[in-house]
Length: 443
Length: 102
Image (cartoon, rainbow over all chains, first blue to last red; front, side, top):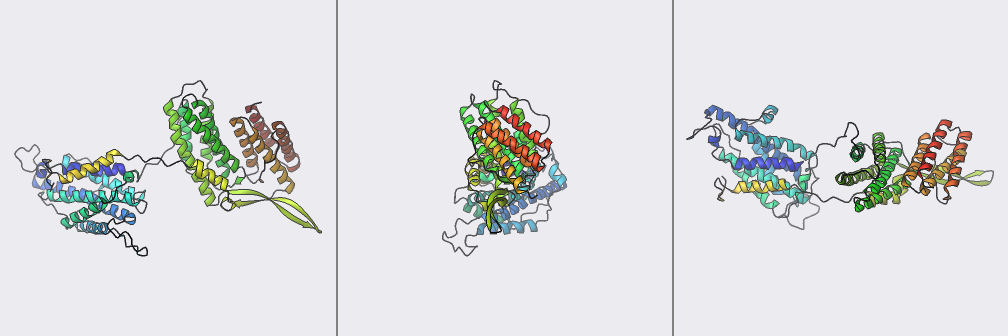
């Protein structure tokens, strides 16, 4: 998730910006030097740092490419020509992207090896650079997993552009500060890169940001909770969690009916157990049970053999059978009960997805009974015939209404990571303050 | 598989009676048990079954139980439904009845 990787990038850069007297930290000559190093050793450290810096530059470049499709200029004319796709193009970002590309290609440093990225360094300064490069490499997988490539809105894009600009400016500042390192190679057209980043940062700050961008990016996939059943209500929670994971595969119509059946029964039984502990929760679950009853009613005439879902059905049966063993007088942990609410919302969303996918891809069919005239020697008899028609064509508005109005959970308020937001402020503070924190420029 | 019209009619009736029993059940557990019996009947026919229509049927559970028993026996005797499957369906319906309030 970008909240974690982005925070790590900014935190390491903040730490690097706060460290001055670079040559002394690398073991250069000083009045008191506990770890003196030869110029050749310091040159080797400098080359390693440049390789780590290359990873950070590549991250900036990749991020600029990823955010470009959704980036909208804040200073372009408001009434733009709708037939000109470049009318509101983010030109500052384009300039920054080109400057980054030039700097990357002009550098003689290669990207760090896996060994260099994963081996801790004994010098603290170099270790911070390693952590920065590691976070940058990890963050690259966020771009294909929802962070960019047209999947961000304008406000979210502004935050990412601001981050790219801040990281680039920090690299330019550090480039100046490390110039005394033996064999150090300055960034190609570093001043131009700094101005381009500043331009992007200023443009990104013109409109309010949306920090929900931190929630985008790669997340580890949810896994099945294996092993024996947990005791009591935890066992039911375990089975319901597993059902959610198993519902990743679209179920056949019959298996969907069985899953719906298990959810109806589970909600009704849990509502009964929760009635004395949390009446509001009990009422919500009783309503959920009623929703599933209505869906079950609608699915009686729905068929379709495409899909799987056998494992989801088995987990649903596990949940119901484990819940049956809990007696009304048993002590229940309210925290476990509340955990069901979140899980139920996600299962409801998954069932709604399964239904909508089945309808749109014509996997599910509606059984329809019609009367057909059978002519025989002048007489006409009406004989019932059964036929199937795709649900999408059948205008099954009742089922669609149930999915859209009752099953689809209300969007959750997005909880933004305060740590990630704070690290942005800290990086900007580190960019503008000197070693004595007096407010002088860090360069 | 194309069902014989009489077979389809009897099967549709059996499905409709079980659905009506699920609607008329007084407890959620019994209603779900009837729904599973309906799915069991559909599963025996590889989900290639006619549409049901429980609208307008009686709400009397005793009458509906007798009707579904009669339909299942007709499916077994006249249309070759596996007797073991029919017995298992009877057992499922008996379990559902036991879960329901009197």
